Image 1: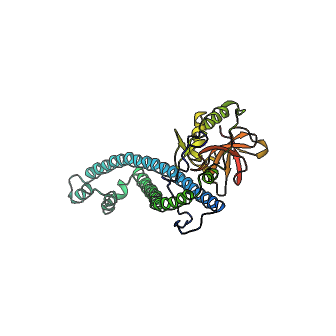
Image 2 (image 1 turned 90 degrees about the vertical axis):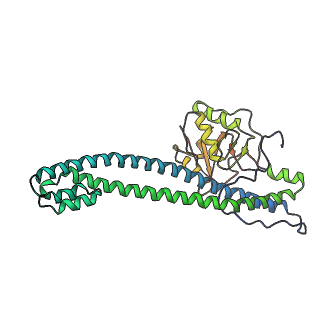
Image 3 (image 1 turned 60 degrees about the horizontal axis):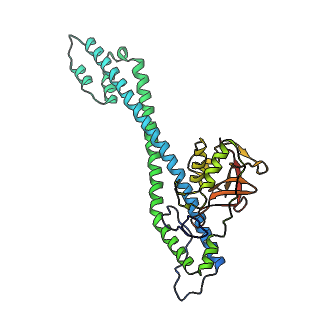
Length: 327
């Protein structure tokens, strides 16, 4: 614990996501690492891991939406399957009435056909097909085909997202290995150098933040988490990633946000930097992969990285992209 903070320094395990830079193993025969070099490597490691984490958050959102759509399509298919069966029975009864007193071999072929397309094929061989064709049956057949296409498309999309998740899971092992190597580099530093490295971006939080309305509740929640740990994909109660913190903070104010920095960029009207107010969300990097909350005085509160945890920092401590005002 450093300076009374609650975070673990550095939390370099449990990261989920995409291939990062290689950091060579540190053997005892190698020269002592330069702190600036270690800082650059660790910073890049954290940043690329966060980019991957936010892509993973986006994939989870997409997968939930696809699964919801798929459930709706299947329910539609079941309801319309019942309708199709009703129409089928009507046509069968009409065929029987049409052919009463005649040979029923053709009728039997129609009635025993379970496949809808086979059912239509058998009807097409009967001389009375034109008289028996019903507009509702034709409309329903077309609608069923459209549903089948939509269902297949949704299943394909769900499979694509599942493949993305599988790919991310496979790459997790490589990331853990790289992070272990990074931790090895940090371990080679003297304690004072290590502490300076992992706490370099921290700033003493302000005593109070002037905010009103929903923004006041959001700011109060975020500021109460200062000192908590940074964990990729987490959204509380004691650990967060960047979008998890802002999602939970605005959730405490009654505003629902997605767990994704890029998606949160579309959560409200954009705000010019000169018009920033406490509670506004501020975004970083291109493509967007980090989000924090403005607290006034040119400062933000954010879940920074596994080394710094939830902390405050200057607004322009990272490449600034823009801001939005939720609620």
